[in-house]
Length: 229
Image 1 (spheres, rainbow, N blue to C red):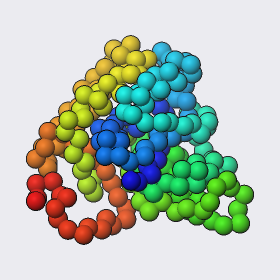
Image 2 (image 1 turned 30 degrees about the vertical axis):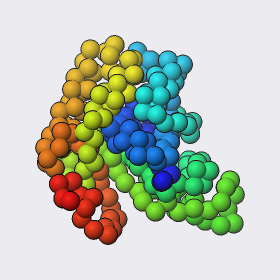
Image 3 (image 1 turned 60 degrees about the vertical axis):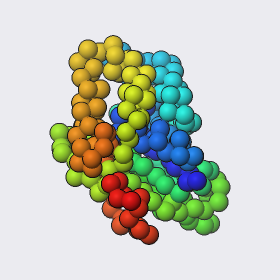
């Protein structure tokens, strides 16, 4: 069992980018926690209390816990204080795997969060530093795609999420103030589902989610690769 932290600049980023993977990892028995860097507010139709309730509902659908760092939405900065707050969470959970947004993004919060977590991964292993918990260095850090740029992802690997599509959709639409009430945002759900089917077609399954890895993945065989074995 792996201890996994999925960092989102705002509640809903994790669900949009890798909701199917989160559901699959939970069912495989992994310990998955969603870490919201901000509360995601203000937004045109939301407020902090409503957004928190929506985030809790989405977490329940996916079968995970979530915690919040408490940075200010739209004003996220890469600071020592932010790094150490994240490093403390990494230590508290003794995380093995971290997921963060893909670093190329139009949203400053997204870029800042990825830099914060990447550096906090290093801070978490340091001794003789004023941080809670025991030092730990998560073995893996992967990037998921939840970008505000109109880019075509070029992933390092794809996660088969066949059978988890509806749960992902339900987790996304739990955010009614973001994807149900505002009519123009309803299309986002369709875009996400279309992308899932496209990436699934690349590996011969119904749906998949893309991920990027800067560090090489190690294999001990080929039987776990989709379509082999």
